[in-house]
Length: 157
Image 1 (cartoon, rainbow, N blue to C red):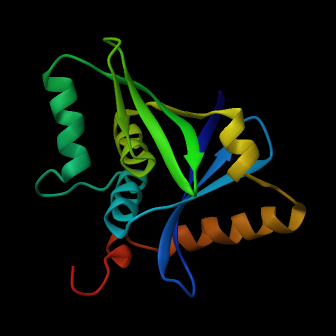
Image 2: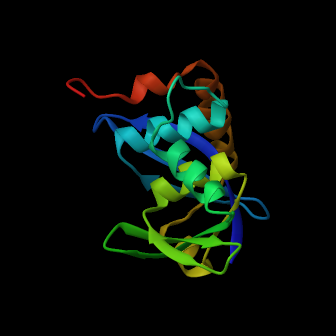
């Protein structure tokens, strides 16, 4: 397993589809995962540390875990099949729950849990960084400083 960090979320054009971008903490690969608009907003809110007047779904999930006396220790991105990623939530109690990576990442950011990915997933779906891509990631980080979670809400939602 390789530890990854969340670089951020963005909307990919021209498809207008959000994605979360992860990066190896000890390596040069990036892992883009297509996600839904709601999950993109949840991840962006968590990265910003934004307070909401009432708990959003992932905040509620974290509060339930704590209320039950447990703690999310780790998110594991385990597999990718036909472009679909699979993950598990690993709790201090030993419980393991299958979950979508997007939900898992949003929860991990709120819980302060680490995110890891199998070498196989990084080999199959990861993108090797080049100097040009590093510059693109830096532009992406600058973009993230200007974007708000509400920017990911699609018309009609």
